[in-house]
Figure 1 (tube, rainbow, N blue to C red):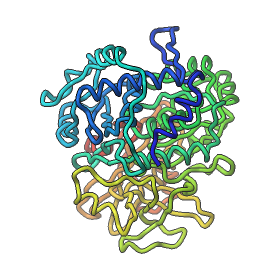
Figure 2 (cartoon, rainbow, N blue to C red):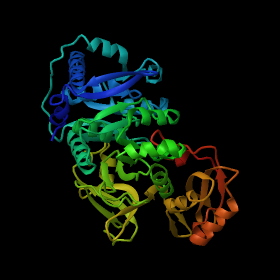
Figure 3 (cartoon, rainbow, N blue to C red):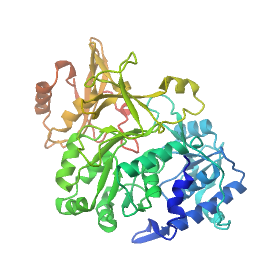
Figure 4 (cartoon, rainbow, N blue to C red):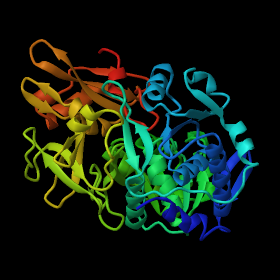
Length: 490
Protein backbone atom coordinates (compact mmCIF):
# COMPACT_ATOMS: atom_id res chain seq x y z
CA UNK A 1 0.00 0.00 0.00
CA UNK A 2 1.61 3.25 -1.15
CA UNK A 3 0.73 6.78 -0.07
CA UNK A 4 -0.14 8.63 -3.27
CA UNK A 5 -3.48 6.85 -3.97
CA UNK A 6 -4.55 7.69 -0.41
CA UNK A 7 -3.48 11.32 -0.78
CA UNK A 8 -5.44 11.49 -4.04
CA UNK A 9 -8.72 11.06 -2.20
CA UNK A 10 -8.13 14.67 -1.19
CA UNK A 11 -5.64 16.11 -3.70
CA UNK A 12 -7.68 15.05 -6.74
CA UNK A 13 -11.15 14.06 -5.54
CA UNK A 14 -11.54 17.14 -3.32
CA UNK A 15 -9.47 19.53 -5.44
CA UNK A 16 -11.83 22.49 -5.03
CA UNK A 17 -12.40 21.97 -1.31
CA UNK A 18 -10.74 24.33 1.22
CA UNK A 19 -7.90 22.36 2.82
CA UNK A 20 -5.51 24.54 4.77
CA UNK A 21 -5.07 27.91 6.38
CA UNK A 22 -1.89 29.39 7.82
CA UNK A 23 -1.34 32.66 9.67
CA UNK A 24 1.06 34.77 7.60
CA UNK A 25 0.81 37.92 9.73
CA UNK A 26 -1.34 39.07 12.66
CA UNK A 27 -5.00 38.82 11.59
CA UNK A 28 -3.95 37.60 8.12
CA UNK A 29 -4.46 34.05 6.83
CA UNK A 30 -3.25 32.33 3.67
CA UNK A 31 -5.81 29.77 2.48
CA UNK A 32 -5.35 26.83 0.09
CA UNK A 33 -7.52 24.19 -1.52
CA UNK A 34 -6.43 20.57 -1.94
CA UNK A 35 -6.01 21.34 -5.63
CA UNK A 36 -3.59 24.14 -4.75
CA UNK A 37 -1.50 21.67 -2.75
CA UNK A 38 -1.48 19.21 -5.64
CA UNK A 39 -0.15 21.83 -8.05
CA UNK A 40 2.38 23.27 -5.58
CA UNK A 41 3.86 19.84 -4.88
CA UNK A 42 3.90 18.98 -8.62
CA UNK A 43 5.89 22.12 -9.38
CA UNK A 44 8.33 21.33 -6.57
CA UNK A 45 8.68 17.73 -7.78
CA UNK A 46 9.64 18.99 -11.24
CA UNK A 47 12.26 21.28 -9.71
CA UNK A 48 13.71 18.58 -7.48
CA UNK A 49 14.02 16.24 -10.44
CA UNK A 50 15.69 19.00 -12.45
CA UNK A 51 18.19 19.35 -9.61
CA UNK A 52 19.08 15.70 -10.03
CA UNK A 53 17.11 13.99 -7.26
CA UNK A 54 15.99 10.43 -7.96
CA UNK A 55 14.00 7.77 -6.11
CA UNK A 56 15.85 6.67 -2.97
CA UNK A 57 17.82 9.90 -2.57
CA UNK A 58 17.62 11.61 0.80
CA UNK A 59 16.38 15.19 1.15
CA UNK A 60 16.39 16.78 4.62
CA UNK A 61 14.42 19.71 5.97
CA UNK A 62 15.25 21.87 8.99
CA UNK A 63 12.16 24.07 9.24
CA UNK A 64 9.47 25.35 11.56
CA UNK A 65 5.91 24.47 10.55
CA UNK A 66 5.08 26.09 7.20
CA UNK A 67 3.37 25.09 3.96
CA UNK A 68 6.70 24.22 2.32
CA UNK A 69 7.05 21.23 4.68
CA UNK A 70 3.80 19.88 3.22
CA UNK A 71 5.04 20.63 -0.31
CA UNK A 72 8.24 18.69 0.38
CA UNK A 73 6.40 15.73 1.86
CA UNK A 74 3.99 15.44 -1.08
CA UNK A 75 6.72 15.96 -3.67
CA UNK A 76 8.85 13.35 -1.90
CA UNK A 77 6.04 10.79 -2.10
CA UNK A 78 5.61 11.51 -5.82
CA UNK A 79 9.32 11.11 -6.59
CA UNK A 80 10.09 8.22 -4.20
CA UNK A 81 12.49 10.34 -2.15
CA UNK A 82 13.46 9.60 1.45
CA UNK A 83 12.62 12.72 3.46
CA UNK A 84 14.75 13.44 6.55
CA UNK A 85 12.97 15.74 9.04
CA UNK A 86 15.32 17.44 11.52
CA UNK A 87 14.26 18.88 14.87
CA UNK A 88 14.60 22.67 14.75
CA UNK A 89 15.92 22.68 18.33
CA UNK A 90 18.97 20.65 17.33
CA UNK A 91 22.32 22.36 17.21
CA UNK A 92 25.86 21.65 15.99
CA UNK A 93 26.60 18.22 17.49
CA UNK A 94 23.16 16.78 16.68
CA UNK A 95 22.96 18.34 13.23
CA UNK A 96 26.43 17.15 12.28
CA UNK A 97 25.59 13.58 13.29
CA UNK A 98 22.35 13.45 11.29
CA UNK A 99 23.78 15.08 8.18
CA UNK A 100 26.78 12.76 8.13
CA UNK A 101 24.72 9.66 8.90
CA UNK A 102 21.83 10.28 6.47
CA UNK A 103 24.02 11.87 3.77
CA UNK A 104 21.19 13.90 2.21
CA UNK A 105 21.61 15.58 -1.15
CA UNK A 106 20.69 18.85 0.54
CA UNK A 107 19.04 20.39 3.59
CA UNK A 108 16.08 22.68 2.94
CA UNK A 109 16.01 25.39 5.57
CA UNK A 110 15.20 29.03 6.18
CA UNK A 111 17.60 31.93 5.94
CA UNK A 112 17.45 32.32 9.73
CA UNK A 113 18.44 28.71 10.42
CA UNK A 114 20.91 28.16 7.57
CA UNK A 115 23.94 29.21 9.63
CA UNK A 116 23.44 26.22 11.94
CA UNK A 117 23.78 23.62 9.16
CA UNK A 118 27.24 21.98 8.78
CA UNK A 119 29.18 23.35 5.84
CA UNK A 120 29.79 19.94 4.26
CA UNK A 121 26.23 19.61 2.91
CA UNK A 122 24.31 21.63 0.31
CA UNK A 123 21.83 24.12 1.74
CA UNK A 124 18.71 25.01 -0.23
CA UNK A 125 17.05 28.13 1.14
CA UNK A 126 13.33 27.49 1.30
CA UNK A 127 12.03 30.82 -0.01
CA UNK A 128 14.32 30.67 -3.04
CA UNK A 129 13.34 27.05 -3.67
CA UNK A 130 9.65 27.93 -3.55
CA UNK A 131 10.09 30.91 -5.89
CA UNK A 132 11.99 28.79 -8.40
CA UNK A 133 9.41 26.00 -8.20
CA UNK A 134 6.62 28.44 -9.09
CA UNK A 135 7.95 28.60 -12.66
CA UNK A 136 7.83 24.81 -13.11
CA UNK A 137 4.98 22.88 -14.81
CA UNK A 138 1.93 22.13 -12.66
CA UNK A 139 1.25 18.68 -14.14
CA UNK A 140 1.93 15.68 -11.96
CA UNK A 141 5.03 13.53 -12.21
CA UNK A 142 5.40 10.40 -10.11
CA UNK A 143 7.32 7.15 -9.83
CA UNK A 144 5.94 3.71 -8.90
CA UNK A 145 5.94 2.91 -5.18
CA UNK A 146 4.62 0.23 -2.86
CA UNK A 147 4.35 -0.50 0.86
CA UNK A 148 8.07 -1.27 1.14
CA UNK A 149 9.23 1.97 -0.50
CA UNK A 150 11.14 4.03 2.12
CA UNK A 151 9.46 7.39 2.73
CA UNK A 152 11.33 8.91 5.65
CA UNK A 153 14.43 8.63 7.76
CA UNK A 154 13.46 9.94 11.19
CA UNK A 155 16.03 10.11 13.96
CA UNK A 156 15.24 9.03 17.50
CA UNK A 157 15.74 11.49 20.31
CA UNK A 158 19.03 9.85 21.23
CA UNK A 159 18.52 9.52 24.99
CA UNK A 160 21.30 6.91 25.04
CA UNK A 161 24.22 7.53 22.67
CA UNK A 162 23.94 8.96 19.17
CA UNK A 163 20.47 9.02 17.68
CA UNK A 164 19.53 6.33 15.17
CA UNK A 165 17.60 6.84 11.94
CA UNK A 166 14.41 4.77 11.72
CA UNK A 167 13.59 3.85 8.12
CA UNK A 168 9.84 4.37 7.80
CA UNK A 169 8.13 3.12 4.66
CA UNK A 170 5.12 4.32 2.72
CA UNK A 171 3.31 1.24 4.04
CA UNK A 172 4.10 2.23 7.63
CA UNK A 173 2.58 5.68 7.14
CA UNK A 174 -0.39 4.35 5.15
CA UNK A 175 -1.30 1.73 7.75
CA UNK A 176 -0.93 4.19 10.60
CA UNK A 177 -3.02 6.91 8.98
CA UNK A 178 -5.84 4.60 7.86
CA UNK A 179 -6.04 2.99 11.29
CA UNK A 180 -6.29 6.33 13.10
CA UNK A 181 -8.85 7.83 10.72
CA UNK A 182 -11.01 4.76 11.28
CA UNK A 183 -10.41 4.38 15.03
CA UNK A 184 -11.05 8.07 15.74
CA UNK A 185 -13.93 8.51 13.26
CA UNK A 186 -12.21 11.41 11.45
CA UNK A 187 -14.15 12.71 8.45
CA UNK A 188 -14.06 15.61 6.00
CA UNK A 189 -16.38 17.50 8.38
CA UNK A 190 -13.66 17.80 11.06
CA UNK A 191 -11.50 20.83 11.72
CA UNK A 192 -7.98 20.08 12.94
CA UNK A 193 -5.87 22.64 14.80
CA UNK A 194 -2.25 21.57 14.21
CA UNK A 195 0.33 23.02 16.58
CA UNK A 196 2.66 19.99 16.80
CA UNK A 197 5.97 20.20 14.92
CA UNK A 198 5.93 18.47 11.53
CA UNK A 199 9.51 17.26 12.01
CA UNK A 200 8.17 14.73 14.55
CA UNK A 201 6.07 11.61 13.85
CA UNK A 202 3.25 12.85 16.10
CA UNK A 203 2.52 15.88 13.94
CA UNK A 204 3.65 14.25 10.69
CA UNK A 205 2.52 10.61 10.73
CA UNK A 206 -0.63 11.23 12.76
CA UNK A 207 -1.73 14.79 12.13
CA UNK A 208 -0.71 15.33 8.51
CA UNK A 209 -1.92 11.94 7.32
CA UNK A 210 -5.21 11.98 9.21
CA UNK A 211 -5.86 15.32 7.50
CA UNK A 212 -4.90 14.18 4.00
CA UNK A 213 -6.63 10.80 4.22
CA UNK A 214 -9.90 12.20 5.60
CA UNK A 215 -10.07 15.47 3.67
CA UNK A 216 -10.82 17.49 6.81
CA UNK A 217 -9.78 21.12 7.21
CA UNK A 218 -6.44 22.07 8.77
CA UNK A 219 -5.17 25.18 10.47
CA UNK A 220 -1.39 25.03 10.80
CA UNK A 221 0.51 27.15 13.31
CA UNK A 222 4.28 27.59 13.43
CA UNK A 223 4.35 26.12 16.95
CA UNK A 224 2.24 25.88 20.08
CA UNK A 225 2.01 29.20 21.91
CA UNK A 226 0.13 29.25 25.18
CA UNK A 227 -0.57 32.98 24.92
CA UNK A 228 -2.38 32.48 21.59
CA UNK A 229 -4.14 29.20 22.35
CA UNK A 230 -7.43 30.67 23.55
CA UNK A 231 -7.65 32.91 20.47
CA UNK A 232 -6.88 30.01 18.12
CA UNK A 233 -9.54 27.79 19.67
CA UNK A 234 -12.10 30.58 19.65
CA UNK A 235 -11.47 31.75 16.07
CA UNK A 236 -10.91 28.41 14.37
CA UNK A 237 -13.29 26.30 16.51
CA UNK A 238 -11.51 22.98 15.95
CA UNK A 239 -13.12 19.61 16.48
CA UNK A 240 -9.70 17.88 16.60
CA UNK A 241 -6.58 18.71 18.59
CA UNK A 242 -3.48 16.53 18.98
CA UNK A 243 -1.07 17.56 21.71
CA UNK A 244 1.55 16.51 24.22
CA UNK A 245 1.07 16.58 28.02
CA UNK A 246 2.96 19.87 28.37
CA UNK A 247 0.37 21.53 26.08
CA UNK A 248 -2.58 20.17 28.04
CA UNK A 249 -0.97 21.31 31.30
CA UNK A 250 -0.75 24.86 29.92
CA UNK A 251 -4.35 24.69 28.68
CA UNK A 252 -5.44 24.02 32.26
CA UNK A 253 -4.49 27.64 33.00
CA UNK A 254 -7.40 29.01 30.95
CA UNK A 255 -10.39 30.21 33.00
CA UNK A 256 -13.55 28.05 33.05
CA UNK A 257 -15.59 30.56 31.05
CA UNK A 258 -13.05 30.25 28.21
CA UNK A 259 -12.33 26.54 28.54
CA UNK A 260 -15.89 25.22 28.63
CA UNK A 261 -16.95 26.52 25.17
CA UNK A 262 -13.71 25.15 23.71
CA UNK A 263 -14.47 21.74 25.18
CA UNK A 264 -18.03 21.78 23.88
CA UNK A 265 -16.74 22.04 20.29
CA UNK A 266 -13.76 19.72 20.72
CA UNK A 267 -14.86 16.30 19.52
CA UNK A 268 -11.49 14.71 20.15
CA UNK A 269 -8.37 15.76 22.07
CA UNK A 270 -5.49 13.27 21.77
CA UNK A 271 -2.38 13.20 23.96
CA UNK A 272 0.86 11.37 23.22
CA UNK A 273 4.66 11.51 22.91
CA UNK A 274 5.06 11.49 26.71
CA UNK A 275 3.04 10.05 29.62
CA UNK A 276 -0.08 12.02 30.53
CA UNK A 277 -0.41 12.27 34.32
CA UNK A 278 -3.77 10.94 35.52
CA UNK A 279 -4.21 14.17 37.48
CA UNK A 280 -4.03 16.25 34.27
CA UNK A 281 -6.48 13.87 32.58
CA UNK A 282 -9.05 14.46 35.34
CA UNK A 283 -8.50 18.22 35.64
CA UNK A 284 -8.96 18.64 31.89
CA UNK A 285 -12.23 16.70 32.03
CA UNK A 286 -13.50 18.90 34.84
CA UNK A 287 -12.45 22.16 33.19
CA UNK A 288 -13.29 21.47 29.54
CA UNK A 289 -15.93 18.73 29.81
CA UNK A 290 -13.84 16.79 27.29
CA UNK A 291 -12.05 13.50 28.03
CA UNK A 292 -8.53 13.30 26.58
CA UNK A 293 -7.72 10.18 24.56
CA UNK A 294 -4.22 8.99 25.47
CA UNK A 295 -2.34 6.72 23.09
CA UNK A 296 1.14 5.25 22.75
CA UNK A 297 3.54 5.27 19.84
CA UNK A 298 7.21 5.59 18.96
CA UNK A 299 9.36 6.91 16.15
CA UNK A 300 10.17 3.35 15.11
CA UNK A 301 6.59 2.06 15.17
CA UNK A 302 4.25 5.04 14.80
CA UNK A 303 1.07 4.21 16.76
CA UNK A 304 0.75 0.98 18.75
CA UNK A 305 -1.88 1.30 21.46
CA UNK A 306 -4.71 3.72 22.23
CA UNK A 307 -7.65 4.31 24.50
CA UNK A 308 -10.90 3.74 22.60
CA UNK A 309 -12.79 6.54 20.91
CA UNK A 310 -16.07 4.85 21.87
CA UNK A 311 -15.55 3.32 25.29
CA UNK A 312 -13.68 3.94 28.50
CA UNK A 313 -10.70 6.28 28.26
CA UNK A 314 -8.96 5.11 31.39
CA UNK A 315 -6.68 7.67 33.08
CA UNK A 316 -3.13 6.48 33.57
CA UNK A 317 -3.32 3.86 30.81
CA UNK A 318 -2.53 4.01 27.11
CA UNK A 319 -5.46 1.73 26.31
CA UNK A 320 -5.74 -1.27 24.01
CA UNK A 321 -3.69 -2.45 21.01
CA UNK A 322 -4.74 -0.77 17.76
CA UNK A 323 -6.28 -2.90 15.02
CA UNK A 324 -3.05 -3.48 13.11
CA UNK A 325 -0.77 -4.21 16.08
CA UNK A 326 0.05 -7.34 18.11
CA UNK A 327 1.40 -6.67 21.61
CA UNK A 328 3.28 -8.83 24.11
CA UNK A 329 4.58 -8.14 27.61
CA UNK A 330 7.84 -10.07 28.07
CA UNK A 331 10.29 -10.70 30.91
CA UNK A 332 14.08 -10.53 30.74
CA UNK A 333 14.18 -14.11 29.43
CA UNK A 334 11.95 -13.04 26.49
CA UNK A 335 9.03 -15.11 27.83
CA UNK A 336 5.48 -13.71 27.75
CA UNK A 337 4.31 -12.84 31.27
CA UNK A 338 0.78 -13.23 32.67
CA UNK A 339 -1.59 -10.26 32.86
CA UNK A 340 -0.85 -8.13 35.89
CA UNK A 341 2.89 -8.80 35.65
CA UNK A 342 5.36 -6.09 34.68
CA UNK A 343 7.58 -6.59 31.65
CA UNK A 344 8.88 -5.03 28.44
CA UNK A 345 6.36 -4.11 25.74
CA UNK A 346 6.97 -5.90 22.42
CA UNK A 347 5.01 -5.05 19.26
CA UNK A 348 4.61 -6.48 15.77
CA UNK A 349 2.71 -5.21 12.75
CA UNK A 350 2.88 -3.26 9.46
CA UNK A 351 3.47 -0.08 11.47
CA UNK A 352 6.97 -1.15 12.54
CA UNK A 353 9.84 0.46 10.64
CA UNK A 354 12.13 -1.42 8.27
CA UNK A 355 15.10 -1.10 10.65
CA UNK A 356 17.75 1.44 11.58
CA UNK A 357 19.63 3.25 8.82
CA UNK A 358 23.08 1.72 8.34
CA UNK A 359 22.91 0.13 11.81
CA UNK A 360 22.52 -3.64 11.40
CA UNK A 361 23.81 -4.11 14.95
CA UNK A 362 21.11 -1.89 16.46
CA UNK A 363 18.48 -3.47 14.22
CA UNK A 364 19.44 -6.98 15.34
CA UNK A 365 19.31 -5.94 18.99
CA UNK A 366 15.90 -4.25 18.75
CA UNK A 367 14.11 -7.12 16.97
CA UNK A 368 13.48 -10.63 18.31
CA UNK A 369 11.83 -13.22 16.06
CA UNK A 370 9.90 -10.52 14.19
CA UNK A 371 8.90 -8.59 17.33
CA UNK A 372 10.16 -5.06 18.04
CA UNK A 373 11.40 -4.58 21.58
CA UNK A 374 10.20 -1.09 22.52
CA UNK A 375 12.33 -0.65 25.64
CA UNK A 376 9.19 0.52 27.48
CA UNK A 377 8.07 -1.20 30.66
CA UNK A 378 4.37 -1.93 31.01
CA UNK A 379 1.69 -4.13 32.48
CA UNK A 380 -1.54 -5.43 30.95
CA UNK A 381 -4.74 -5.67 32.98
CA UNK A 382 -7.06 -8.65 32.64
CA UNK A 383 -9.37 -6.62 30.38
CA UNK A 384 -6.49 -5.70 28.02
CA UNK A 385 -5.76 -2.11 29.06
CA UNK A 386 -2.01 -1.45 29.13
CA UNK A 387 -0.26 0.87 31.58
CA UNK A 388 3.28 2.09 30.90
CA UNK A 389 5.66 2.41 33.82
CA UNK A 390 8.65 4.01 32.13
CA UNK A 391 11.61 3.16 29.96
CA UNK A 392 13.64 0.04 30.65
CA UNK A 393 16.65 2.34 30.83
CA UNK A 394 14.88 4.39 33.56
CA UNK A 395 14.42 1.37 35.84
CA UNK A 396 15.92 1.99 39.30
CA UNK A 397 17.34 -1.04 41.10
CA UNK A 398 17.74 -0.25 44.78
CA UNK A 399 19.01 -2.95 47.11
CA UNK A 400 17.87 -5.59 44.62
CA UNK A 401 14.33 -4.17 44.34
CA UNK A 402 12.96 -2.80 41.04
CA UNK A 403 11.50 0.71 41.15
CA UNK A 404 9.48 2.11 38.27
CA UNK A 405 9.69 5.92 38.45
CA UNK A 406 6.30 6.65 36.90
CA UNK A 407 4.24 5.30 39.81
CA UNK A 408 6.13 7.59 42.20
CA UNK A 409 5.85 10.54 39.80
CA UNK A 410 2.08 10.08 39.49
CA UNK A 411 1.57 10.25 43.27
CA UNK A 412 3.83 13.28 43.65
CA UNK A 413 1.90 15.08 40.90
CA UNK A 414 -1.32 14.57 42.84
CA UNK A 415 0.01 16.63 45.77
CA UNK A 416 -0.94 20.31 46.18
CA UNK A 417 1.43 22.79 44.58
CA UNK A 418 3.27 20.29 42.36
CA UNK A 419 3.35 21.36 38.71
CA UNK A 420 5.94 18.95 37.30
CA UNK A 421 7.80 15.95 38.70
CA UNK A 422 10.27 13.33 37.57
CA UNK A 423 12.10 10.63 39.52
CA UNK A 424 15.56 9.25 38.69
CA UNK A 425 18.01 6.89 40.30
CA UNK A 426 21.28 8.23 41.68
CA UNK A 427 24.27 6.18 42.83
CA UNK A 428 24.31 5.02 46.45
CA UNK A 429 27.17 3.18 48.18
CA UNK A 430 24.89 0.86 50.15
CA UNK A 431 21.87 0.26 47.89
CA UNK A 432 23.44 0.76 44.48
CA UNK A 433 20.81 3.34 43.52
CA UNK A 434 18.20 5.39 45.35
CA UNK A 435 15.33 7.46 43.91
CA UNK A 436 15.50 11.25 43.88
CA UNK A 437 12.57 13.47 42.90
CA UNK A 438 12.99 16.63 40.82
CA UNK A 439 9.97 18.92 41.11
CA UNK A 440 8.62 22.23 39.83
CA UNK A 441 6.35 23.59 42.54
CA UNK A 442 4.32 26.53 43.72
CA UNK A 443 6.37 27.36 46.81
CA UNK A 444 3.43 28.98 48.55
CA UNK A 445 1.34 25.82 48.32
CA UNK A 446 3.77 22.89 48.20
CA UNK A 447 4.40 21.19 51.55
CA UNK A 448 7.36 18.85 51.26
CA UNK A 449 6.81 17.25 54.66
CA UNK A 450 3.18 16.49 53.84
CA UNK A 451 4.19 15.03 50.47
CA UNK A 452 6.77 12.80 52.15
CA UNK A 453 4.10 11.61 54.60
CA UNK A 454 1.76 10.68 51.74
CA UNK A 455 4.50 8.76 49.95
CA UNK A 456 5.38 6.87 53.15
CA UNK A 457 1.75 5.87 53.58
CA UNK A 458 1.43 4.60 50.00
CA UNK A 459 4.78 3.06 49.06
CA UNK A 460 7.39 0.70 50.45
CA UNK A 461 10.37 2.29 52.14
CA UNK A 462 12.77 1.53 49.26
CA UNK A 463 10.58 3.60 46.90
CA UNK A 464 10.77 6.77 49.01
CA UNK A 465 12.69 9.59 47.28
CA UNK A 466 15.77 10.37 49.31
CA UNK A 467 15.64 13.99 48.30
CA UNK A 468 13.38 16.55 46.60
CA UNK A 469 15.25 18.86 44.23
CA UNK A 470 13.30 21.99 43.33
CA UNK A 471 13.72 23.39 39.81
CA UNK A 472 12.29 26.28 37.81
CA UNK A 473 11.55 23.89 34.91
CA UNK A 474 12.38 20.34 33.90
CA UNK A 475 14.53 19.93 30.79
CA UNK A 476 12.29 18.65 28.00
CA UNK A 477 12.49 17.79 24.32
CA UNK A 478 10.44 19.70 21.74
CA UNK A 479 7.69 17.11 22.25
CA UNK A 480 7.63 17.43 26.02
CA UNK A 481 9.62 14.39 27.12
CA UNK A 482 11.73 14.97 30.21
CA UNK A 483 15.45 14.69 29.41
CA UNK A 484 16.55 12.99 32.59
CA UNK A 485 20.19 12.91 31.53
CA UNK A 486 20.22 16.74 31.65
CA UNK A 487 19.07 16.98 35.26
CA UNK A 488 21.69 18.44 37.62
CA UNK A 489 23.32 16.34 40.31
CA UNK A 490 21.17 16.35 43.46
